Image 1 (cartoon, rainbow, N blue to C red):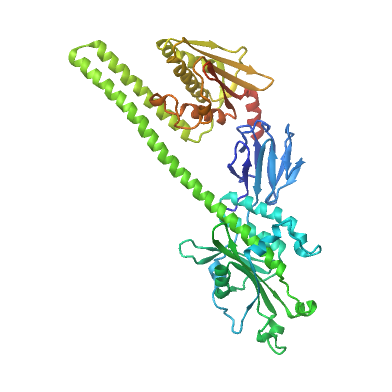
Image 2: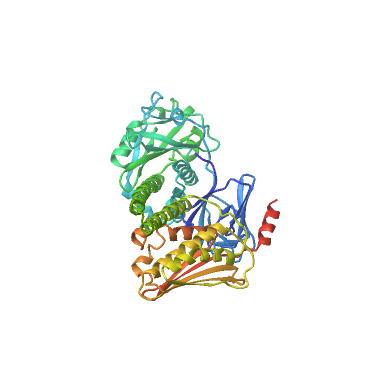
Length: 568
């Protein structure tokens, strides 16, 4: 198990992202130089800083515009605890601290079977069903006003939500460690363990063991298989004691020396099946028994609480397992879809190359230069298509950092215009270029932005090239100093985008250009803009045209120089 603190994004543009805190200083913000980069326009470029101090992390706000909040409260500095919720802008993150690691081989310290000690005859004192135990979460149910369970119920609901949130770490070992910590916060147990059921053999395997501070951790936990079978088969939690009919209650027996062992064992009942069991126990010395007047340390209230905890723990385990399985299934489905789609595109391209080659061969045989030239143009066009497909695939699939350097946006877009000028003339489309002035040098990835703009301009030319009216594509740039933005606008007078296609416009392998398109142009452009902490917006008026707006932060070269100097 990786013992690394993490931040998990549970709401916002980066939902599902997980950041491991591995450095003494982690910077959180919108700037690409941040170790925790948040793609949220309401987050400052340098929003907050997370520092490690004496094995604990603390977060400090860096005079951000919209502030930093922990558990709903605005903070300047705050020591982080596992389960804290951090909000920056519209993004909500869950902090999970490191779990206590155990080097124990649990098979050596937890055994399931008959009691190993002679005369250890524990008996079931009370059993409670799953439904009965879960009633403590029903706020309409009445509990004695001064009962321990009534006092704990409201706080437990918050505790369980935290436990469920931890399940998003996709680390079951860390999840079980956290659940055991929560149990020991609320139940006065000396020892405990959580066992999960092996899906193949249906056997219970100990996964987590914990001992209260001050209690010897060397003693082996012996769990009766009879009691475990009772708990799993009947789906009931049980409270057991080795007192009752035990001969050790004889004043002349060993009770004076050994005391009484009490235990609670509950099933981990999920939505569909039992996924495991939780066992806790405690022992009372002779002196403690005399002080309490032989009163039990575990009561029926404790049993009901443990059943509720077992149910919530099971739901968290199921969520973790199902989420992992879903992610794996989605990956396999994506691979299958990618292979099928690529095969279709490559087949169409090969058919085009084959047709062009046939014309070349026929022209050479008949010494017809016009036919040969026509065939070569078809081959060349399809070579460009397969080259574009490969480049789009590499850009879309590869995790990359933008190659940032000072550049002029007008020069980059102007190069795209010159590249597409011949194509526009061939399709009789008017290509208009309106460079914005002034356009100072800014820091961005010129190659990446070039490709993003090229894909959008290509789509616009394709959209108006087949129309009956003369086609027009207008490309413009702007520098917006007050908003600290660079903007590229690509507008056409084509048929626009139907409303039912807008939702899937940036989905990979979905193209409105039939066999001519790869379905990757717009997803690639969106990915490149996202790498710059920018965005791409679409405005469509069906029948009249479409406008694509590409925006990225305007970062002056001197800002990057200052950042590098501070880091050095």
